[in-house]
Image (cartoon, rainbow, N blue to C red):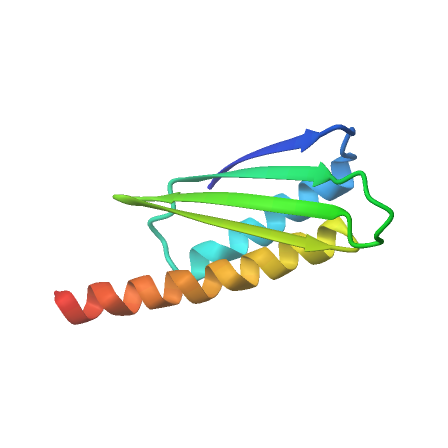
Length: 100
């Protein structure tokens, strides 16, 4: 799957980008028709420790899922967003199976 990762207001290191790529690749085990994904990693300027935001836009045929999570680390935010996407993809696949 093509993953387009962008970091806003900071430079993401290669380990973080690789983590995002690997985590999103796992989504294909739940739904094999994923076209591409856009990942936006942002740091919010607040005093709160939970200032890392991961926003993932997943493109699938005839639809798009957008999940936004805010956590203490980017890894945690990406992992949480991917878990939500897994649930959405399973639900979508089940719906397609019922309709066909």
